[in-house]
Image (cartoon, rainbow, N blue to C red; front, side, top):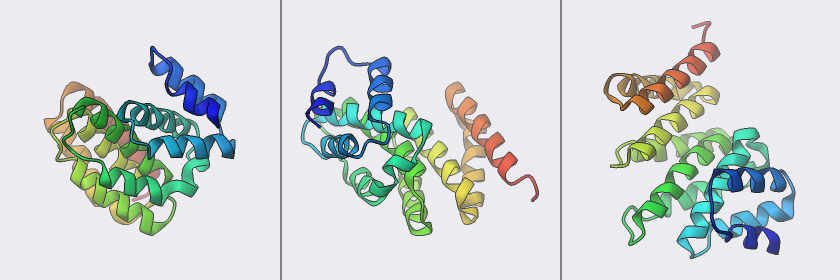
Length: 183
């Protein structure tokens, strides 16, 4: 557990470190608990790194973090929009937007996450708006009642997004079309 705490504080930090730590943690419960503890800590830089690692864990498999779905949604809702270290919290929020949408495994959790995504899609940050759009589409993959909202959001990003947003929207549109091909 102390190892996760220490590894989240190494410098320099980047995608390789996040991927390595995510792979090392995997589904090992004591390390997952340590990661969650760091997500709720006061150190903004460490919280951002912990969110990055959580995102990488859910890239491979959301199951190890599903038991924390409600807590993670609550954390995302409570993160301040404006703080002195704005960029760090924005990165935390966009990583958590993806994590929360992936780990929501009950209808109530998916609907709560969808409400959060609908708020985040209005943020000033392009990256956060893109993560919220991807999150909404991810939620719709398992919650058909969210499909109309997800499709509308994807369409909006296809028409009005930056090139990166359009690429992400095309990817999510393909996933939605594949899932709901029989419609």
